[in-house]
Image (cartoon, each protein chain N blue to C red):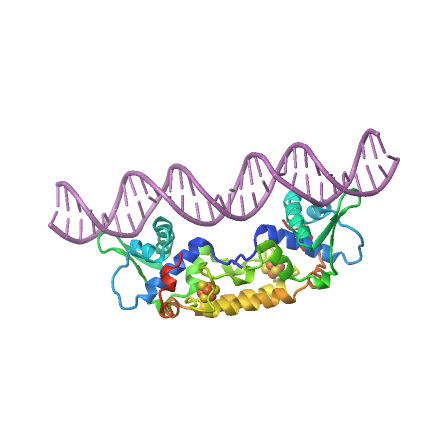
Length: 145
Length: 145
DNA sequence: TAGTTTTGGGACAAAATTGTCTTAAATATA
DNA sequence: TATATTTAAGACAATTTTGTCCCAAAACTA
Ligand code: SF4
Ligand code: SF4
């Protein structure tokens, strides 16, 4: 049950890492993040560019530059990130890939799929980066490929 | 929020179609299904081969041949199909793609992801092809690309 | 037996995703 | 100014997924 693309997965891991560094001020370099999380630097950079363009991150070039969250981590929710990286229709897709979700003419699986999507969206809506960052207590999250 | 591969989506649509043809006996040809559901014949054939090899379908060649469900549709559940087409670890995957899911040392998003997966699995466990087939009442399901 | 229908299986092509690399632009520091 | 650091942007390659095609095998019909 794979829900997120790799690009989103990497982006999320990186954002959670940033949120976990509560005490730090200023920018965090993408190089540091990619090294600590063992993520391809260039791949992550592209994802971060998207996040920057959409106002999740702000970036700064040059020595001591890097990226920073544009808002406090407790005001950034998973839904915000996913909407940028996967599209705003992320929670509107049909399980069977049919176009034009059916408030009218629902397809056979609609009943349970709609409920499942809503539950998922509810979780994403209410989970902030801060909440996730707080749970980064051991090294496992940082070290795994 | 895309959960299933195209191969699985097509396979499922086709199985639901078969289940919806309650009155029919004997084999249904893949050609008929692919035509009615507007699915690539060869692509669907490969998916059906997998299902046949894993005991979801039985097939028969030659005129009036085709495929048939090996069990009554009310005894085939979404989980059965998904386990074959997506792998038995379908409901065991991490949201962040980390290996070795953590009953121990859970990663930051574990709490809510575990609940979401269980809810989803519960739905799949309890939804049979018969149940879905019964809901195929209009033409929408059959005709859409 | 010959010809037709249908699944089986594999080669192959196209497209999407993932990953790598190079160069440019911005910024800091000496 | 020259050099080092860091993000921006896009070309390019590798891999996976998706889709197409061809031919063989099985079964029926005449
Ligand atoms: S009615 Fe619901 S389940 Fe059916 S196609 Fe639309 S979104 Fe998907
Ligand atoms: S503990 Fe849960 S969220 Fe963390 S890696 Fe394992 S399955 Fe994923």
